[in-house]
Image 1: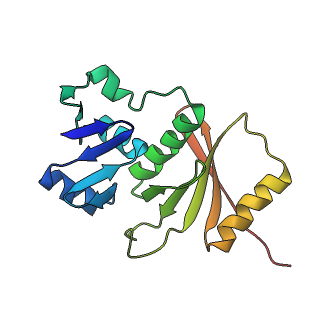
Image 2: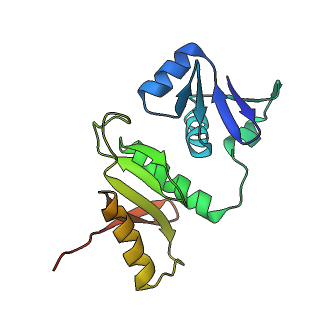
Length: 165
């Protein structure tokens, strides 16, 4: 059973730790695995883990909405994470609400992520310099930049690349 310690989720069950590590979830630390909030929410929703908080069981209602947030950015990030995981991609959370996505068949630690994905919604506004900066940063770390537009339960992906003259 996973344990919620503050904002961190730890899984200690030896068999489950091995299974989660094999499927590229979390960060293995000793005999435990540390899950990000997005990974924990995904695994709770898929009923792969159950959650416990300081020796007291967390209600099903609470665990279903873990983490409890009204943050629209987190909800968009989770929608993209869930969509990509359901398609078989390995995903790692990155800085500033970005996701690092690995090509299918590439394992974390054995290769590098291929894409940086930034979730956006239909109200997102950016000027060309913001978009250019994101594409240039992705290019500088040898990745492709993808903007993921979240509209309800639908996610559309837009890849932008730097073009050399």
